[in-house]
Length: 225
Image (cartoon, rainbow, N blue to C red; front, top):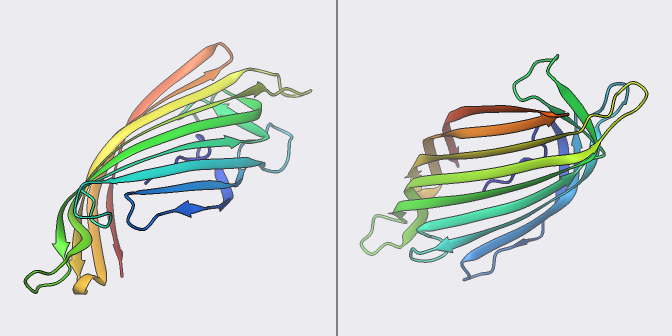
C-alpha cells in the first residue's frame, strides 16, 4: 500500500507519526491510522524564517481477496485518505525555476487519496517435498494505482508580500509488474520490475491556472534477506 505524500510540492522536511495498526488474525483486511506532525522546507514567504509545520493524518486500509488464505491473496485492494494542515505554504507553477510564478497561503490544507490494486500470480511452494504448503511469495505481481491531491488555503499577505489567492490540484495513474525470486528456502527474496504512469497538475495563482502533465517511469530492484 502506498501512502500519499503530505506535501504536493515535494518539499517535505520530516515527519513523526503514531501508528495504531489493525491486522486481525484470520481476517482478510488490515487497517491503520497514522497521526502526527510534519515539517516542510521551502514553504515560508520571503522574510519569514523557519520551516512550515503542522498536524497530519492518514487513514489506510486494505482488503485481501481470493487465494488460499490471507497470506496468499489473489488480489490486494488498498486505499488511504490523508489530510495535512501547515501554518504556511507555497503554490508555484509546476516545473518552474526560481523565477516561476508563485504565491503563499496561510493555513493551507492538503487533502489526498490513493487507491491501488495488486494482482498476485503463481505463488511459490514453501519446499520441494510433495504436498508442500504454499509460501507467501508470488512469482509475479501486477500493480495498478491512482492518486489525487488538492491544496487550498487563505492568501498570505504582509508588508512585502501581496496577498494573491492560489490552489493546487494533481492526480496520477500508473501501474507496473514485479518479478520475485524465492531463494535459500525463502530466507532470501529478490525482486525486479518496471513501473510507469502519468501525472497531471493544475496550479492556480491569482486568476491564472497553469496546467502541466508528464509521464513517469522507473525500474526497481530490491530484496529481503
